[in-house]
Structure formats: C-alpha cells, structure tokens
Image (cartoon, rainbow, N blue to C red):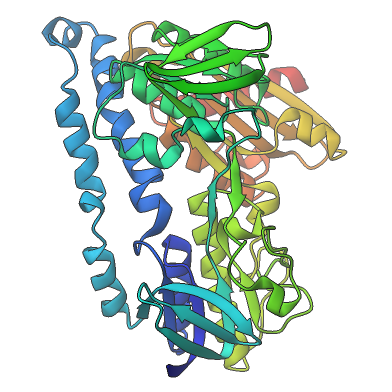
Length: 474
C-alpha cells in the first residue's frame, strides 16, 4: 500500500473533473484525478461527441436536399460505414491517450482505479488487480462521478438486455429496427440518428416529447420525426418487454405488440454514487449529492460535488461551468483569499437556476435558455409571451427552401428583461448564445433594440421578436 497527499483529489476524470482540477492547479494547488474508465468521461466517448457525430451526416444531407440546386446534385443514400468511421474518429476509437497527455501537460496527476471516500479528506483507490492506494487531501475532495443510464422498472426490460445510450452511440452495426422507450433528449436524438442511418425506428413516450420545454417544441419534433419515417407513439405506456430469438417484443398499454431488433432504454439517468463511500462521510449512497452554489456539500468544509452528480443540471456545459467555479473557490479558500459567492460572482454557479442553455439535436433542432412561459408564471413573474414564425425571416428562407420553425421570447414586463427564449427549426443551434447573453446580462429590451442583426441572416429573428413585442406593448 502506498499513500500520497495532494491539495485536491478529484473523483472522476470526465470534462467536469478535468476542469475542477485544472482551475485548482492554475490557482497554485496540486491535484490528482481518480478515474476507473476513460479520461474524458461520458461526453467524450458515449454521449455528446459520438451522438452529434452520428447525427451530423444525415443532417447535412437533409439540408442539401432542401436547397434547390444542391438537391439536384445529391444522389445516392447516406454512406453508413463512413458515418460510423467518422464517429469512431471523434472518440479516438475509445482511446484516452490524448486526454491523458493533456492532464500531464496541465500538471494534473492521474491514478486509475475505483475510488471511494474512506474518511475525512481521504480516498482509497483500488486498481484492477486489487492493489490499494490511499490518497489524502490537504484541502478538498471533489466528487465528479456523473450519472449512469437508468433502466425503468418496466416488467422484463432489464432482462431483455436493452441498449442504453452508451450502446446506441457506440454501435458498430445499425440494426434493421430499433424501438426507443423514452421521449426525452436521448430518445429524440437517437430516433433522429437511427432513422437517418436507415433503421426502422419506433419511439414510445408516456407523455409528450421533450416535456419541460415549451410545448410547441415537442409537437414540432414529433412531426419532424414522423416526416423521417419514425413511428412516434406519445401518451403511451410500456407494460412489458421480452427478448426472443428474433429480437425484442414491447407490449404497450392497449396490449399492442411492437417488434424490433433492439430496444433502447432512454428513461433518464441515475447518480453514480452507490459505491463511492458516501456512507463514510454521513451521506446516503445512490443519491444525488446536494450542494450550495459554490458546489460545496453543506456541513462540510472540504467536500464538493460537481457536475451531474449533484443533480442541479445534467448537461456537460453546465457541469464545466460549475467546475470552473468549484476549482476557483477551492483554490481561493486554500490560499486564504476572498470568496466571491454573491449571485453571479466568480465562485458560484448562479446560471444553474435561471439561465441554462440547451440544444436538442433532433429533427428539427430545439435551442432553449432560461424559463419557459409556464415556469416563469409558476415563479410569480408578470410576463408577456412573444411568438414568431421563423419561416418569415429572410435569412431562414435563404438557408432552406420552405423553412419551418418557431421562436418564443418570454419577457418580464415588470423589469423589461428577457426570462427565456426557445427556437425550434433546422440548423439554428448557434442562435442560442445571443439569447443566453441577453438573459444572463439582464439586458433591457430598450437596449436590445440597439443590437442590430445582420441582414439577411437568421439572427434577424431578434428584430422580429422585438417588433412584435413593441406592437403588443403599444
């Protein structure tokens, strides 16, 4: 047994853990990451990067098919082998050599193995051959272990060997047919991807698609998926799943049987906290770890939970945002410096509460930030909702023939600032950051009139939203 001491120990070497360690090292601390799988984590190998690589080729083909002149030049089907090879390149064929090299260049140490809290400021790491190594932290331990795919308690589902998001994003062969249980982001994106790759896809959701977003987002995505040939079943419960020699049978609420070669369980996430020693520090294993806005666990002066594991916002970019705040505040506290923990300060994750941007790369894309109209009303805001047809924007009509989309702006009429924005339509994800800046900066509507959008671009939607709001306010 060997023992080592660092200023900071990070459990989990995904993008969140990497950023916590990097910010702490930049603040003058020593740091080590404990990782049991691949450095770079879920996002690099089984989520953000491979999923978007699977989606992009078919998206580009569809875009060309919707522009006169380009459409006539496009012939032949999608090259599925080439798509999968391109996807593999984005995961470096599931090798983390490049990520490990980055850690070394950043001055961050790495130990491979399963890490468990074993006492105050102490982590015990067990490697594959059972050898243990005890690490002690002078100042902090940051838990950044993320989440796993959850398998809903549907009779027979677990025994039917369902795909999870990892299987869907790393598959080397496309099944003839795929049934997807779940209408959230994973379900929508994988339905879009696999339909584009030639599979016959059935999407089964208990409620509507993309609940939690503006209702029109799920409605437009359901219509778009149907246009791709996806059999979208909303408001339908799954009562039983079984696997036989010819594939999987899914029984839905009315007793109908749906047959597919594979079934994907896209039914949420569960915290990866069951076996990381939480009980040794008075916390309950298997649960999300609650934190304050500096990402520190209440009642502790040394334990932090950063990224998906705290359950605040399960998005990679928000986890990295939290990581920057956490790494900086760990260094500040260790160095005896002032802590800037007021709202929107350097050491807090204020945006988690009211300004979370998210893009769903479905058919069509959905880009949203801030509060929906319902969430704003539920929070007690006096609001005005402004909707606009994106197809009426010149830049959109130039981008794609027959462009169809919708924009919504939710305005706080008491303060004259934007609370939320949602865009739905083809190829509009890059519109979102302007909305995020407006919300985070609490830019008054009167000042936004001076942010002139270039013509003819899709960004002209901002002018149209403001004009509509002005007319409604008159």
